[in-house]
Amino acid sequence: MDVAEGRGDTAGLDGLLHEVRRQVSRGAEPDERQVLDWLHGRTGADFALVAEDGDTVESSTAGFPRELLRSLAPLLARLSGGQLAAAVTRVDVWNVRCEVLGVHGARPVLVAAARSVLRPEAIALTTHTGSVITLLRRARDGERTWRGFHYKARQVRFGVFSALLVGEPLLARRMTTGAVPPLLQAGMLRVHLLHCPPADRDRIVRTYQDPSGYHGSDLMVHCPVFKEHVICLIADDTGARAGHGSGNHTTGLGEALRRLVRDNAGYALGASGPHPLGATAEAYGQAAHALAAARTTPGRLASYHGQTALDGVLPRRPALAWARAVLRPLDSLPKTTVDITRLLMSMPRGAVARLLDLSRNTVTAHIRRAELALGLDLADVRSRAAVHLALALTGGSTTHEPDEPQPPPSLDDLLHTEPAAVWARTFLKPVRPPQRRTLQAWIDANTDGQQAALRLGISRNTVRAHLRTAESHLRRDLLTAGAGIHDVVHALHVGNAPAI
Image (cartoon, rainbow, N blue to C red; front, side, top):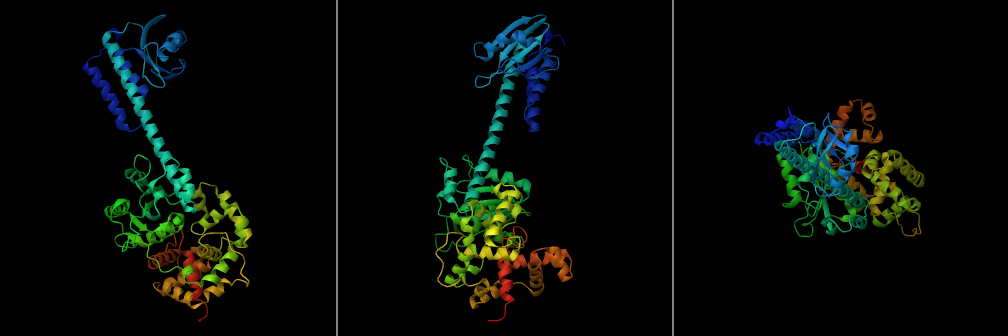
């Protein structure tokens, strides 16, 4: 088509809007080349978007004569510098029209080159197209900024959660100086663990996210270990009031999560009891236990209602003396090693690596250092159970009081007591004999399902089914993160001890 006959009528503008709508409907970033090609088809001219340096062609039609740019350099500099908004010139056989796009930041120039003079209609359509390209660029930049904000907000939320998980609420506050999340102002929190399809996690987290990047007084975090989990840290607003200790919130994010579960058959939710911010790891463990129970509950909702923990029934002073003796070697190790060791008590080392964004080799090196200090093989489930109990007895602290005058008791001494025996009988009572035999074989095989199946003469699937049944009866997570295994180890050990 001859340039002199280019049209800038209503049909041309409609065509431009159609091209923009087509690109927007794809959900991808705008393709400026396609817009320029469309404009070429309407006017016959060739076009290029030239960056403000005057040399870089960001996008162009196939026939644009790039050799023009050297001659146009002084003019392009004046346009990008804000001295001119538009200019017309002639270079050799080319009629050239330049228009600067945008008024803030980078100021690219739309250059049109044609062998004939552009008619007014074509000039008007070119100007309109330049305005549309400017808007598309702003939309693209806004989209990138939006994605960047959500990515950074997600990182900050995960950093806060990681600090709380290792018992460092003050570190979490320092990480968010100037924009401290309301959660960190709360005295207590509950952890809700939502199980949902991985594809739904982003949508759920963004639905409840506020402009500050948090979730009102709460936080939602993508679990880095299990892609089906969203970790929800909810400021406790009921635990301090009588009659509200069950975790059954009726308002706020807690109720919103319950609605999601009620409305979606593939969802489940486990909730912890109230805990201080520094005990977030314990709250997370409770939520994991509750989620294990929720999967087999008709409503797929469960709050943690665990019996008294083993560390709460053992004779206090002798138990503390034993725990301090077990953990004393950790005093000489770096805090990072101690934190990794503590996390290893409730999740596999691969999960610890993903949670802390460390390599498996780095985590393994820290664990090896702890094993050498403790004189224990932490790959052994019974050794982990002993260290887990010691950490529970000392509140997770590795700072110990001076030695007791007399030697501390052994773990067998502590477990061979009437309170421990009553605890073990109560703990194992819901489990039927077939599942109990499977649990024992599984622990004896160091939680290797295949080895347990060989010992019992049954299939591995049957072993797993028995463990799932025991998991629901015990209301403990055994197969996902394994946070409930230690109670099983101690209860079976006490149950197999001679009668007192």
